[in-house]
Length: 114
Length: 114
Image (cartoon, rainbow over the protein chains, first blue to last red):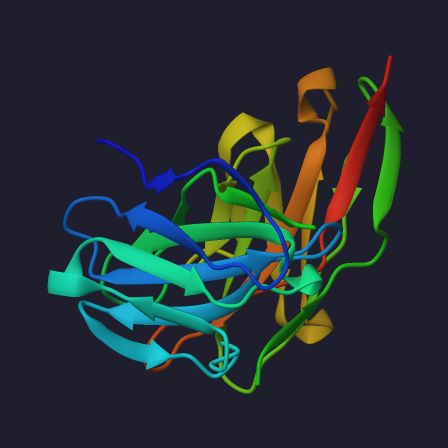
């Protein structure tokens, strides 16, 4: 089975610019997650989708971050405008519906904001 | 809300020695518990998970973990370390109600010396 695909792998932008990340989950996985992993820390959940509906976005900085999951499959995460503190790895994960299911992670996008 | 504490940001062992990575959790309901491993520039890979079946859980690459409710712990062990085990390890907890939300610890970097 194909894994979670993410692009791009690396992105360097200047502060106040905008950036978008793309994620394609494992086929059939209803739940999709975006995590932010700052260097030296554990992943922090930004937003969680169930099909194409948002389940949890309580930690998403909504003044600059947005995410969508059209048709309950692919997802994009956007930052506009970026700040220096947004430098991190952005991880996308997916899982089957239901609690107790393991998350399957993509390789992430490493964002550097200068 | 659930949370995870990983004691020790770095653990150093010699090749062939016992590996012990500590994880304590906090949850208001019976939890699901996970250990993930992250190699450089990669996403997280599931090592093992506890979902209220057997308290001793065996995972990939010779790792295992024991759920101890009285101690609210889920420590990860491996009898004999291998050089290839050097990586970052994350413990995560999910409460077994509603939509699954996985909360990660801050991680423990395992260093293996020859």
